[in-house]
Image (cartoon, rainbow, N blue to C red; front, side, top):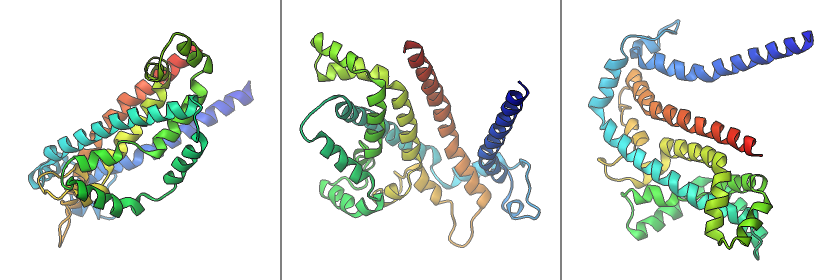
Length: 275
């Protein structure tokens, strides 16, 4: 009993240290956003939250169209997330539970594309979108991200273990076609995996900087991360203002993570109770 208690206490201490280490970067961002730039570079550095947070936030709103850029980013993030959840889970369901000619070869080809650095596809992707006349529009941000290899791989691995073959066989006996099996059998079981993929995709799209910087040519239609880059001056940078902008852009992600994480944990618990 004593050894078990020591082990439990040690585990809790290690977990608490991990939590503190994970939270500290966010706390440090709040400290920098709430102080002035001279305070940031002072020695010893200030470790307490200052009184200039709302002043720095006001500077951000004065320099960029923050809420307009946030709205654009929100639209793109939601659209890409919905498309990824649909197309990736649909493809994963087929790869995991259906036998068809070339299945393993196609999946191997999919994994090969996953290993290619995204930077190598920037030029051909830009040329293709330019041919379509989509450069400068939100379609250039949404359509290329509508499906990805990671999401298909993740959902396929999840579906293989989560969806019993007996459920698929029962649905076939009842006369359900592929899409009905996907909607009535696949989606309810895959909800925990979809919750994780949705959070992962939304955060990645929200924080994307390089691709929007390349394809968005209208200065009045800039996503949030590109707009925040304009806070950096040519001859000098107000770092407290920059960090205030970064903090403002992170707050919605915290809400998404909390809401999505609750559904993720609830779906896992519900699935465990069913099995």
